[in-house]
Amino acid sequence: MRFSQELPKQFFYLRERPLLMHCIDLFRSYDREMQIIVGIQEKLMSYWESVCEQFRFDIPHILSPGGETRYHTVKKALPKVNPGNLVAIHDAVRPLLYKSTIEACFEAAEKFGASLPCVGIHDSIREITPEGSRRVSREDFRLVQTPQVFRYDILTRGYEQEYSDDYTDDASVVESAGYPVTLV
Image 1 (spheres, rainbow, N blue to C red):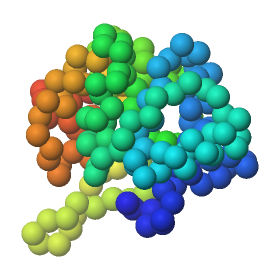
Image 2 (tube, rainbow, N blue to C red):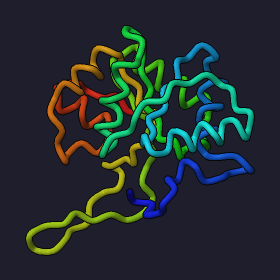
Image 3 (cartoon, rainbow, N blue to C red):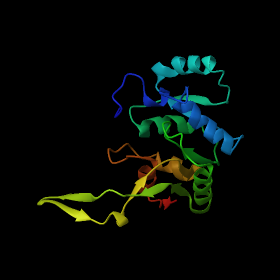
């Protein structure tokens, strides 16, 4: 929605292929047995299939109909996930990710139940107050990225909750259900 283009940004090309293909390649190279589920708008499923044919892209993946928001897309895809596994949710427009980051997120989720990668903030930031604004220490904040990785049981319990506008990512859904999230 934020991209404001007719074609979603995961279909834009980087190095002569759609961003989404690069993301799928990345996770497949991390774990060749990984189940990959792609949440995609129903009206774009045939487009994606034709792009896969055009590029002879044959990495196995399951398509799941997208929803109105990220929350709804993930909730629709969860029934397709093999129970008992760790589940990684990744933004399909972030192909520039180290395998070591994926590995660290999976290890942290295995140990603690939920994890997400984050980076420090280098810009100055301000908090909006009734009086205007005030400076805050950027050392106290992190920018959240993906993949966000969860134990299957924790993620499914989080998604049993009704949707809230406060859910900006999967970690916020899980946290609102009472589970802590480990930063990587």
